[in-house]
Length: 237
Ligand code: DC
Image (cartoon, rainbow, N blue to C red; front, side):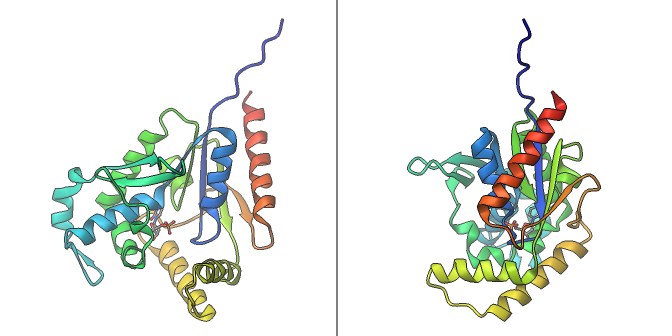
């Protein structure tokens, strides 16, 4: 009798520009297929919070000598929240999920995430998390640097205007009023920094599948990603 071979467990890398819905789709896919989801941006945000809490940032300048000597003191992990079951980021045993999304951290994460020894440490930790496969990770350099051999790589884009509108809607829903043009300018600036930085610039891996979700609903993009996943594992069987 022919036995069905077990479904192969793979690595799924989701890279792309900021605010284009990467984490929403990556999280939904991981939940649907029973994979671990890792938000690599949260790790750079956690290191940034650590730097702020230890007085290592002055303006846009990071005290790299002190940070280097403290790197072994920074432990980042992800655990499910006991009430909601949602994954939260922990820094040295403390839940920092809310704090790492604050403007205080968002403002300083760019200078921290370009420091070579910070990237080396984060990439090593991310590769360790992927050792047993069965993982969906989103970020900027997952398909190029962290998992260059990932079985499925997605590169997500959307127009700056679409992304700005989503961001404005999100903030207004939270009662925060923002100027649309200012948000577009901020997104364009972040794109420029992400694409032109020397350390691991954002770029599409040659074998990544591009998704422009400017005119897609969340349900449509989730279905699109599930189809790419199915195609990939079916080919590996
Ligand atoms: O996706 P995000 O906005 O939470 O990312 C926060 C910052 O970290 C952003 O400035 C880009 C950077 N980042 C990175 O350099 N490499 C990654 N793999 C993920 C994020």
